[in-house]
Length: 307
Image 1 (cartoon, rainbow, N blue to C red):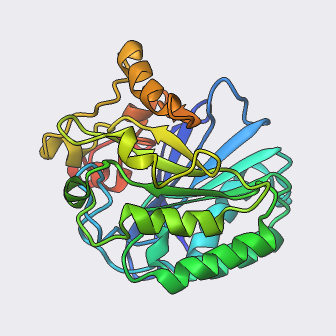
Image 2: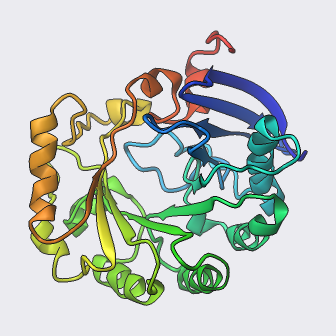
């Protein structure tokens, strides 16, 4: 194995975070989780890192800062292999829906090695339910990478076996620069790429919003660009990360306010969009599996118990 395991925390009934050290001494983390009411035997979610930290520095995410570069393809695959072999020693995972999200530490579109990972993954382990999930802010200057990603999806993951997601967060371009503080594709270019990326039988491309109070979220901006036939909407709370608390950002999606959340979703649904309200189990906030980087938590609370 190319990684040295350092910490683990959480519980097997919901989510478990793993922290590992790379060959150059960097700490990364990855997660396994289930999504109630589904049992692990029905749906299993693995969330792996693609970078050592992240250069983007989104104000709601704890992965930014102390960026030390890209992970190799073997370091990314090692996270998946560790999690699979931990439960299925022979490397065959019979779970009918195995989601592998490349979304823990780092934007995967910033790592060219991700193309190698996606090419190798189907033959590396026996994963009949494999569903890679690629979530990106669409960094500017990554056109060639994204075109190659589209080719790989077409060749290896057709028929709805790939999930593509653009993280947008606000429909106002100036606000997006606050929430995603690097140069990215604008909405028009995302839509154009998505129209070409999508093929008959594919899963709809997700437009992910973790909207903050005070930042524009206007479905009428989305509708002329993104067809509901090819794109779906996901609304996500801003989790209580160190970064979001430090920057005073409050989420428009409130896990405790079902009526408010419903009204936000209905604004998109009236325009024909499938809309997903992505609210995880609140216990995951304490575990650290959906509220930010456990590496940061360990640095700030070094005496935290290692379970």
